[in-house]
Every structure is written in C-alpha cells, then in structure tokens.
Image (cartoon, rainbow, N blue to C red; front, side, top):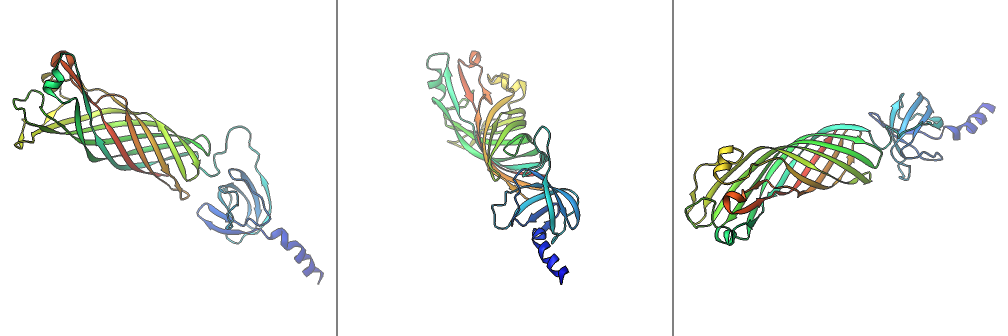
Length: 315
C-alpha cells in the first residue's frame, strides 16, 4: 500500500510528456512547465538526456514545438527535469530558425521597357519620336540558387544568383534609321545573370520583407522590329550587344545593369524544408539601352521595370 501512495506522490513530477516526435521536431505538453521561444534546454526523460531548441513559447493549446539538437526523444516519454542551457556570447544557432540554409528559387516576371527622349538638337525628339517611348509588358521567367544566413530569428542576409529572361514590346512612331513613317513595334528580349544580395527582416515567423540591390551581367539583348501599319519586318533580328550593331544604329555600348528589389513574402517552416513564396518590385537605377546623343542629335534612354513572383525552397 505504501508503495502505491509513494507512486501517486511521484506522478505530478512525471506529468510532462513528449506528445509527438517527427524527424527532429518534437511536440511537448505545456502543462506546468515554462519554456521560452528561441532558448535551448536540457531535458531528462525516459530516453535519457536530450538538448532541444524551442520554436514556440507554448501559447498554443497544443503545446511547445521544439527541435531535437542532441540525444533522442520518443513519443510518450515522461520529463523528469529540465534546465536552460547557458550560452556565452553570440546568438543561438537553433531556436525558431536554422542559421544557414541554401536552396533554389524560380518564378515568373512581368517586364516593361519604357523610355524617354531628351533632345540635343531642337525638334529632334518631336520629329523622330514621341516624347516618351511606350512599352507593352511581357511575361518571362527567372531562376537560380539562393543562400540564407540568419543573424538572429528576425534578421537574415540573403544572396541569389539567377538567370533572368525579360521580354517587352517597345512601341513608337518611327524606328531609328527606317525609311518609313509608319508606327512600329520592337520585340525586345533581354537575358542576364544577376547577383542579388539583400537584408531580410521577419516581422513574425511567417511574414518578411527585404531589400538590397541586384547587379546584372547582360547575356543577350535582341530586338526584332515590325511596321504595324503593314506587318513588314525591318531586317533581321538585331543583336544589340554586338559592337557593329550598336555602333551602326547610334547606340551607346550596353553595360552592367542595376536595380533595387523591394520584396515581401511569407515563410512556411516545414522542419528541414522551408518554403518562401514572395513578390518583388524592382526599381530601375540604370538604363538597359541608350542612344549616343553625339550621333543621333538626341538621347533615348530605355529602362527596365519589372515585377516578379518567386518561390524560394530552402534546405
């Protein structure tokens, strides 16, 4: 009888249980136990001593969600004691985040290439072009590699290396060097390899915003011009990165291109896998293409404005 009484007195000490274990993630009962989000704890359980990093603070009725960092835990294990791990300097590598992740990203972009005309000879823009060069947006794609390093649970540094394809239709009244006065459309395709470092801030674990800079190295820039009044094509497709082409058409040599990403997205942490769908508007800083004012008696600047939807998959 006395053994039964002793066992009954001991039961409260063993009331905390491991409710569920999946891979290295664990759900812990939050009855009469206090754990802090982003902290590490040693647990003494039926399976021995383990080290965990806590994802949530237990406000959910389901319990604490944590990650097993050392040792083993099994569903139904009883917790006999717990203690916080002391950390000397720096932030924890584990908690609601992994410090370093890598992965892939891909998506679509909607791009326009608007331009403006600035004359150096009176009347040149009016005689040859509208005051602005209209652009019809085109749909294309981008994709590549992504690296992410967490400075804290709120702040991360991202780096993307991407292949980008942009397409747009430029419209105006008279194509440069043409013998017709009919309206024209120039289908322009622009491909680049870009490097995009950004700083990312997580408002909450599932919502973030980021900004930085994107630097493009042009791979190809081609244009095919059509007279829309009769459907005739002006010559062959022009390679605007070819020196003879841009010199013959009074164009300045195309170079590196810069824009600023303004990004918002959501984050879904699935343990070893994190999915981050996101939307980005890119603010142009430089021109994709411009005419040489000394040759053409005026200057036309063509910029690239784009919006993109990406899915980042991080491991």
